[in-house]
Image (cartoon, rainbow, N blue to C red; front, side):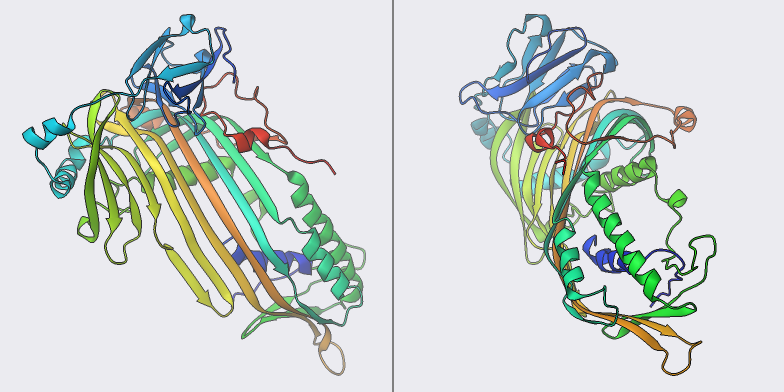
Length: 508
């Protein structure tokens, strides 16, 4: 086991670090500034999610899962007086913004009679179509340098299904069962955290640069503060009960860690403090670093990338493909092909493949079994959710590039094992053992993160332009305690869903 030196902090910090290392395993605005609307099916009145809103050549936006979108003229590279709306199975529709008088745009389902044509003139079966897709990957997808204007949203959700410290015994009076039970009750059981950025991505899919124009974080700070308050309380208890020159022996089952205690005159009057030597806060990842890493992770999952976990093309012989139907996306006719795993492969989904150049222009996927699972020594972990969708459109060079990527990644975790924190002192006479806290941990929870990347505009750039592109490393996000519809009023974004709009910190 790795040793940690202690100087400041408390046993609560250790519990948080060592246990949770596993558990963390509208209306139209008729002005020159913005335009908002909802896209719905003309016949059924149902919202049309992920419809494409073209605002100019190689630029546009996507409706959210509730069918809403907003455009900001100030954020458009080439502001237009009209837009074009299209979605799978619907006729493409042009709209003059000045003529729109309602906040709902109706799309007409597109009647098509192409099935018979393809059955007679182009009788390819599903396996042959997939072969053509693989043959045309390099030709169809743009992998060169580009400047993409983007909006990125990361939604994190955590849930603690069970928190039981299983108090066994303690030689420190204040660290009793009542306190440990109260800790379990105070710790938050659910938490959500939303991060949103608007900016530009420069480069290719392997070494991008990111320039963030504006960022927001929507979460409840008080949940973190309650934990810190609890940490302060435990710190006081240990400072009053631990002897100078002591060290802690932390044992969990077969494993043990020795923790030294050192005197620090400048930290407290009696010099007795506990600290886990962790990363310097100044060295913590910045907003820019975190968002770059997340976007790189998303890019890695593009199905034409070698390192993608989506292996239905690379290992196509391990999947079954079935041609289900035909449809239209924008003005392009597409095959609709469902795929499912043979044996122990991981994914099922639907491919929308153009009939002329055999490009996948839409992908929906879902895992059918855990991608990873681990269970040993009372610790369990299952990566149980990995699903999403990808939409592609042609760029200025006639190649396909992402317009929208959504990935949802979730896991469950648990720890059921003993934990002992023993204070020892080698400078006292008699037995070295001074104090002991003994627990039987039972902690179960789940975490889920959803990524949404929208590309509003894309243009090819040269190597020199990429080299000259800058990143604003000191950019910080604005903390919001509730959804504020005016925060992004000068930016084109993907409209928030109902859960984000309803988020509000409850004041206690």
